[in-house]
Length: 179
Image (cartoon, rainbow, N blue to C red; front, side, top):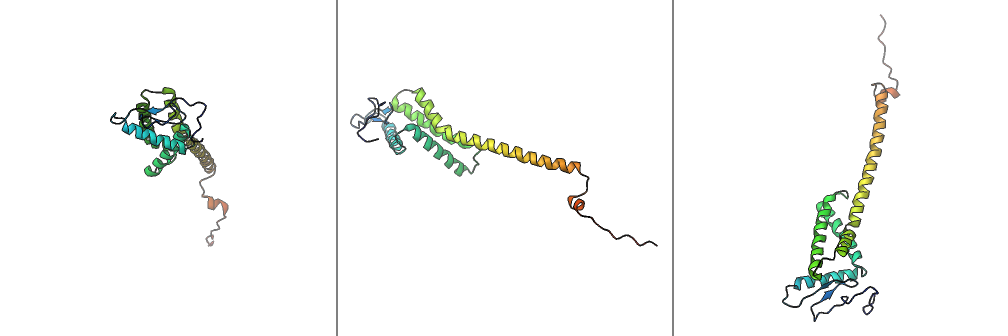
């Protein structure tokens, strides 16, 4: 998107007006309002950072949520040294997403429930999908290995107690000499 172009779904809030203390996310009705000394400096700074990250991710905040959510989850797995199937690695991601939504709420002035739910879904989609797919694959693999081990156990129980090497070779023992 070019700097001067305005998307078709843009609202009056799709602008940056530093003189008025307003910072908005492109393409969404998201603005942090308030000027100097209003207690909104942190929220305004956060909104500017988020707007910059959103631009880097292709201009859609849902892409930003997806990319950042996946990156945070993978970083958490690495730091915690956990496997892909560990759901506990989602906890820091959910906490950070919750904090992000609180900052959005402070910036806008009220909850935008549909947007909040879409943001949460976009953030958690790939981590949860990967966890489920790997778990399903692990369950199937374990079931296949269990079935293979069960077949081997059944084969062993059906045979006599003679060890396998003894069944495959004939062991000749010298006979005692007849006296």
